[in-house]
Length: 346
Image (tube, one colour):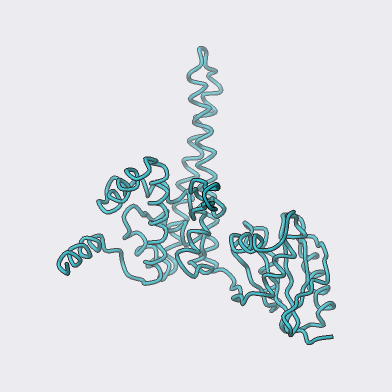
């Protein structure tokens, strides 16, 4: 038998189960997926998983656990593996889905997804996963709680409007709806107070939020969403990866002269990030001359305002990454200075 270079454990994580494929790559770069198991997504299942992998790999040092960043369901397993000093990589879902397209897989199931993740771990050089900053995790929890509360309040307000529009509104229903809305308003204030107090406990986080708020249209809440959802851009290596993570990347199919679809957003990413940048995009279109010119130019080109707003969302998101990495405030006069320098050169 040839020398084994390394092992990879591909894990497709669901709410209640872990679909696992164990693979190995030999010195001649051939790949063998030799074991498949299903475990419960619980502490007992984690222990069974690590014991089973150790038996199959003979505790080989080059054994890496690879999984997708699937919502929150992967987090307990990731923390368990990190605490037990296992090599672990958490990959953005868009990377795995793009990789699966390169394989000859006609039917995608949990098992074939686990196979693909295991192959991905064998073929690629992956970064080690680091436990998320506890502060960023708490920020994400609070911003998501507020988002859910806002959605519930909107539903309640719609119910109130419908009830008030009836010929004979029920007084008891109106009273309860008003009371429920007032309660949710107080809950939102409590969440925001806790969130803003939390950001002040860490000087570096507080400074990063201040820098992001220097961008036109970005407020404290949007900055908190960005840092919380990206864990301080921990998994992000470039702007293109960030837009893909948020689902703001553009998909277009074109082949010869017969196949050509309209470009559209993939929306295969973090919906919380996309949603957080919608209102800021509308704000900068009204208040910032640079972004307004971009918006007008795009609308003039294709006539679709919603598409132009999405482009502004993407530009704002990319700008947060640049500002965070460079740790310098946004200069609103930068583009005017650039234009004047260009005109002077010409």
